[in-house]
Length: 506
Image (cartoon, rainbow, N blue to C red; front, side, top):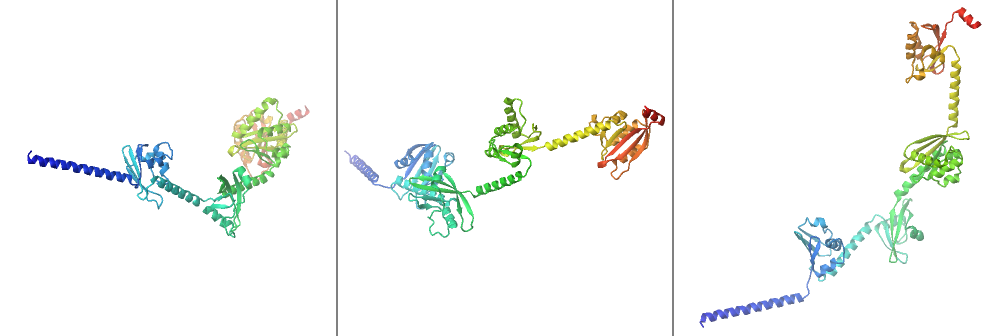
């Protein structure tokens, strides 16, 4: 064998032995490194929102939480320790993100890298070996710090009472209120609110007053109790604004009630549920309804039923349809204005009005208009009597107001001038009348003086003039001022003496 071939074979064999030794050494080193404990981080690999792979420590942390997707569960597990972890929508717009732990003494760092649909999340902390246990502790500490901050910074008093009925913990708002209410007390742990525990257990929330020693005022709070494992957590909410509003409303209602008490019109206000909420003494006087019945807050139908029983409203002809009529009346008063006149068998006449009010309430007013109706009837009777009396006169009579409007005339006037003011849509004035008179008489300058006399506002004396009617002959017109600036115009026919004597003899 040539020397060259021997050298080549030797070199190859040596190289192979060397490479084998290197491989065995590296494998041994790797086995030693894997056998030795060392810091391990938590690694998560997501495809979109679904978990593809995770280390054992990371999987143990993730599977303690639940969510719609694996990413939601991850946010629930890590948000307390690493606030700012993106939600599903924000995740798809990120390339990378680095978050530090919220706690100052926590050196952990979260790295997020995203490429296409794949997202890798790595939590590194070189100072720990058991990342799962440390994460649980740090998450609890971060959450505890947040809860402490929220409770301490709450503007409302919060305190914890233990099984021995002593205050175990309280927040800053409770301490501030306790110092203002009990400045002489040495300990803030002494009870501030006087609570009826039985009433609180029954109603869950009760109103409690607190006297402020520094100002001498009283503040009101809604106190709620929550029992947790033998302890009771109390929350107090400031309701001073609510109390002030209720007092203002009560004073306003009392003022209205005092005002309504002096009205002669009966008033009944029903709330949105149809129950009587307010009535005045005039309603009792007009309807004769017992105060006990009205104080019992009857509903609308019961109220009108009682009115019918007391004969304060007209007796219905058909009782089966009466309740429907009442329902229609209530609906009319609820959605619009309602008004009706009731004529009673006792001779009284009532005007009943219904008006809607805010928040579904409705008010009914009952007014005794018997005197007004009697006065109107008497006035109408007097007008009819006066009209009948003037219609017996042979002379034509007309009355004009101070504004020159024809307000009254008799039958002789209508027949003489062929005028009927009642058939006219517009008012008949002295100007209209003079135009008609001029068309039926001979020319006479006295017509202009008549117009000025009727329209004159100063003192006037009776005045007369002679006119000649085309068909009736000569007449004497007499103008006489009467009350309220009105004027009576009287047309008297001038009959010759022989004819007059014959007429008288006949």
